[in-house]
Amino acid sequence: MMPPLKTRHTTAVLGAPVDWDPAKQGECFGLPVHRDDLNGRWLSWYQPTEQDIANILAGVPIRLSVYGPGHPPVAIAVTASTEG
Image (cartoon, rainbow, N blue to C red; front, side, top):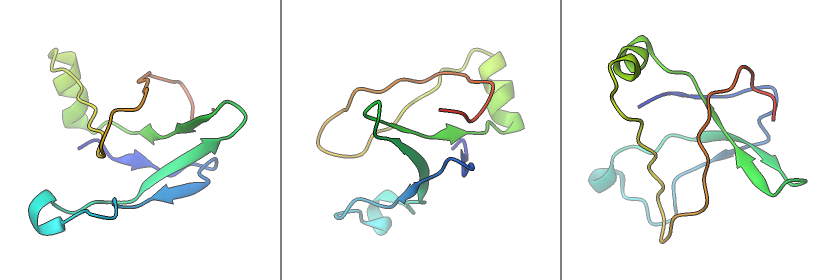
């Protein structure tokens, strides 16, 4: 799992869903996020490990997992900074 980053813009840390069962679903780590109310979005950043980078360069796809009853609109991008 690519580790999420806490940045100077972090405004909240999202925890496990209410019905999360660590025995069945594994440990759920907090996700540092920036809530951008002006644009109606939540932002989070991730730092790829050396193994992640090697896998990406080898063409291994990146997977996004969303936990909950539906799939919200999402976007994944490579950015040069942690600015919103």
